[in-house]
Image (cartoon, rainbow, N blue to C red):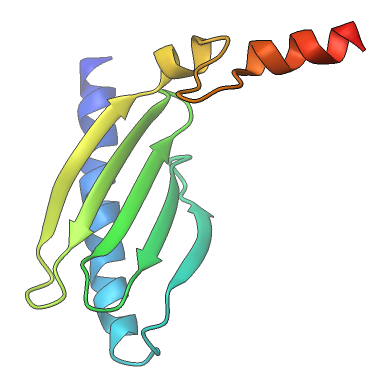
Length: 116
């Protein structure tokens, strides 16, 4: 089991590196308008999103739907260096019934609907 986890992380790093190289190659041929590249599912089941923003590092979001984790990487425009910015297990987030920082909360809206 431990060997399988090690293999998954190695595949994630290799996939991210290959994706970073692909992003750098595309930068030279594409216009730098804000755009979102459609998600791609690798053989490992990972989902990736690439966000290009002019004059800012390319952002790569990798989602592992099986382990319910999200990782965010920045790719430097100058050097192509890939930097891990954040990793989060979202299982707890998805277990919440509601989370809203402003009024009305989802529960308030539901209560209003039930009254009418």
